Image 1 (spheres, helix red, strand yellow):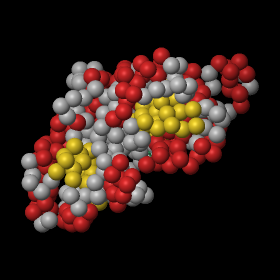
Image 2 (image 1 turned 90 degrees about the vertical axis):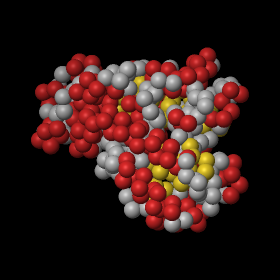
Image 3 (image 1 turned 30 degrees about the vertical axis):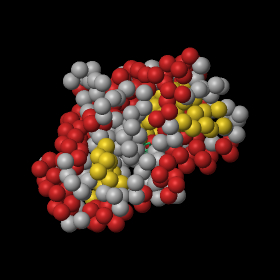
Image 4 (image 1 turned 180 degrees about the vertical axis):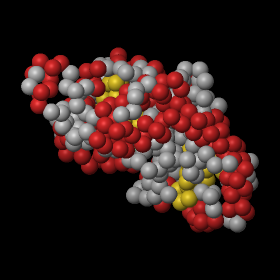
Length: 378
Ligand SMILES: *Cc1c(COP(=O)(O)O)cnc(C)c1O
């Protein structure tokens, strides 16, 4: 596939034994050389909260997949998001956020940032053309939104951000570096919940950020170890293995999801099927994407029907996560968006009968059969 080199998956040796057999500290002869310490202490493994050889190998591997040299792993996606924002924002600074953000990020913006004196403004992905940046320091978006799968024009936003001296942060979790690489379109920082596609096996919680800007990486890395948001080396090691099949998994996710979206859109009991390959217009930066990942949204008109449907599914499990090898299903109005009032749900364009499916890499015919039998029962 054009632009995505699976070769880069093999860059960086995995020092899996180092994390198990070596102590978490470096011995004194290194520390007694202050000049070395100053030159590059991230690569000298003084203490494992700051850097670790296994973690480092995986960070460089992932950065490479995103078209950068450096990256930082975190204990979770939320750790990555929190640390990135707190590295560049302080009291009285302003940031602008997409309204359609992941729920956890919303909580951070609502509960933590204002208490630190950071001003938070919002804009909808539908109103991008009228966005004015004023004196904001950061614009924060997701490339593909949850659960309605809207595509944010990263190329346009990076242009207007830079014209106004702001930074553009992009949470690219829903597309993965296989489908889309925001740094190529001017984003200053790319963020991932590694928990989702990059690990892909629903057995690890980790986060990642990468950038072409060394100064940004350095600032965020120093905050990461100061706040203690460091990842566990064993989990990093698991991600180093998982990522070897990222391309294969993404091809299957892309294919299965598109076929299932097609099936659902032809079904008489289903309305408003959303999947980006169906859109008549998408921002130019997404025109060469090989696909749009595992998530499909559709509407079964009432919450009762949606509940009945998901309870009848056999292969699709009802669970909150997404982007793993197994197929999952949720009802956003009862889970991720349960705290929204009827009015807010309406404004967010999420129906009470809305269903979000994360299509796994199982056999496509089995998945379609399962959906078919569950739809017959409602
Ligand atoms: C899951 C998710 C996160 C949070 O990641 P964790 O690893 O669960 O902390 C952030 N952004 C998006 C888009 C996500 O889907």
